Length: 123
Image 1: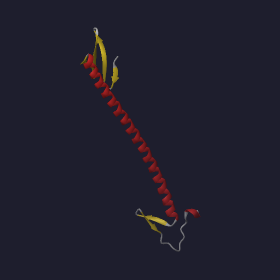
Image 2: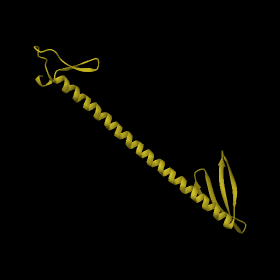
Image 3: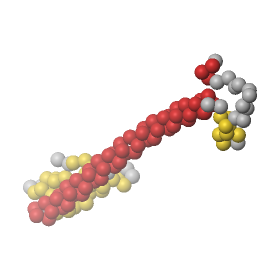
Image 4: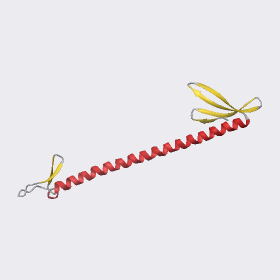
């Protein structure tokens, strides 16, 4: 009859000839029963627990969606980083082929007019 939710269980229990609504809480290894009521009072407590459980499930699903979004975002970022490295390599090779060189992380056009520098296409 009890339903499991998080760390507590709520249930209608038959004691004697009547049904009573109890919330169960675990603290360490011990389980505590909290009497909530019978009849209308028990039904109201059950509705409150049901709505809390639904809210918890919605939050849990939202967290799962957020985690999925973040993992997708990380995959896109990894793809972009790989594309950037590939583009940098292509640009570097292209500039070297056109006669540029790097001086302190700055691309400069070579001033050698009479000397021929072997390019990638000539190799």
